[in-house]
Length: 118
Image (cartoon, rainbow, N blue to C red; front, side, top):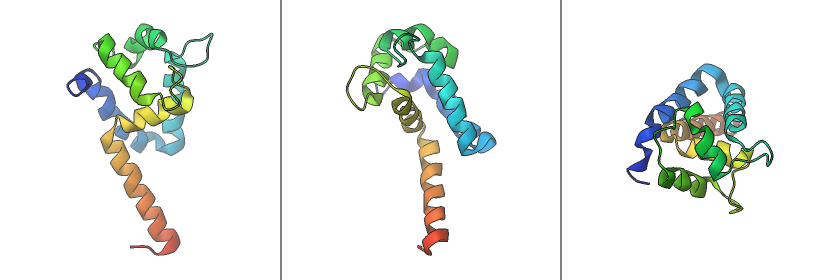
C-alpha cells in the first residue's frame, strides 16, 4: 500500500483541519458519521463490500480493490474481517500522521500541566 495512499491524501489532510475547527468531540462525531456512511446497514460494521460501494462518499473513489483491502486489513484489529466503529476511528487517526503528531503533543502538554513533567 506504499503508493496506494495517493487517492486519500486529500482526506488525510482534512482530518487535522477538522480537529482544529471541531475540537475533539466534534471530530469524533464526524468520524462516527463517516462510519455510518460506510457501514453495512444489516451488519452494523464496515465490510469490504460496503467500503467499496460507499467509498466515494468520503472522496476515496479512486482507490482500487487492493488499496481498500489494505485499509481493511490495517484497521481490522480483531481480525474478524470487518471494521467496527472503534476500529474505523483508530484507522482514520493512523492514516493521518499529522493528526497523530498533534494528539501526541496534546497528550504531552496535558501530562506536563497535570504532573509537572517536562
